[in-house]
Length: 617
Image (cartoon, rainbow, N blue to C red):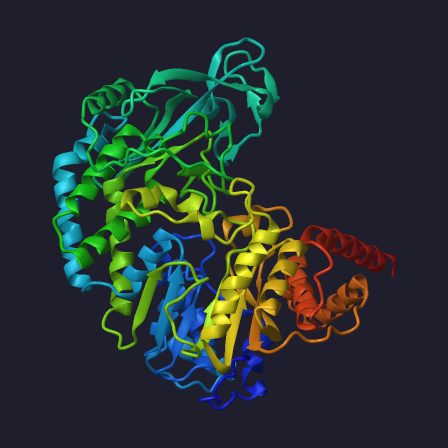
């Protein structure tokens, strides 16, 4: 018997009401306390999501996100109660006559780390109580473990390590002498990391990829296994004496300190777990990294383990908030995935965090002072807790698959979601380092992903996504809408998405672009990456007859001409135009005909042709 849906409980929002929201590229800035509280791949600023929620709902409504990630949809829901002035101004600029007030949210997130982040941020402890507990932990760490970051400045006075740059050791192909990557490839004033090796001993030059990186064998200090790993040496130490910063090469005092640290026991809190490597494993820079502790220097492993143990004496909610604070710094800054980069015009290399969305270990890994780093991070997190503490809206977070929810039929008023982008990021693998400390892991069986390691093809990805979107349709009230943000450079992934929402009973009503003002790592570096994510407004409807398919290059040319008329440089970029091209075909219920890199080649040829035409006039 065919199930019929009950009458609509809400009046439909007039279509013209949302034109400002979807017609222009809505900025999604990557800044603010809520955004900066915890690093997580591909997340969207909650302020941008709040505009969609406020426009599609009324106070008292319930919002659902089945791919909640780190909980930004929940944060955005809370912001709707009493939005900051900048959010009110943006709604007014877009012509959104919204009714601000408390809403509720239900978040489903398969990932253990994402669910933990979302739960903690949307249901935080008292910020003052949290800050006092964190400061107590830092004082104890400074008193008991601060000696591990001791160092002498170049003049011989005692100072404190800010960070240590380590370097891979290479062997010159000509003279066969050893040289560090630092000595052979790093230059200053301006800072530059060369892709060519120059031997400090014989001045021989060679492409860096042709130079052997030396390894050595050792016995693992935790499990006793023999392991082969890259040889590394201290390249440079950056420190602080009083308020004066300094840097120097490593010396015998540093080696003596490392020898003393070797005698320190490894805390019991350190997870003794093997890494379930998958799509991110690279046999080059991951050589010898088989267990969690291999991502740390011994110094930082001990310090972090002792910090973790100091949280154990607090009650559950406060303990989780303190561990949230520690983990917010852990994988990105406490491991050897931290790195230095050369930025244009700077005299020295710039210190930065681990690359998000990957588990990359550079040839110049960095060891940071965890105590001072966590002290700096404390203010951001306390401020984020202050934003969400005491809100009337309720946010329920569940670590579970969105393929099956506990929610009744038609119980959700609006959906905002950001599904996994095919094989773009293997979230469970990326999150494993932090999940190991929590002792909670993601069940990868229902991870919706394209993965060679998990033997999940694009067909399996489509099947799982269809199941999740069908469940979303079941719980969505009649007349309710779903806003879906998506990012892919692959036509095949876009078409799998289209098939999934169509088979689930959704249809595209309109489309826009979310303009991420600072792209994620993969959006910046991946060949054919898309800057600016298409935003689809989905409604409950049967599959529609597709409109006649126009030649893709005819569509591309029309979009080029329309972008030129806007006089907006962002609209004329290849990345933005590809997003517009995707939206064109999806709103007409047609397959996306080509990948981003093919479109970008056309865009380059079209641009060059216009330059030549202009020069000939």
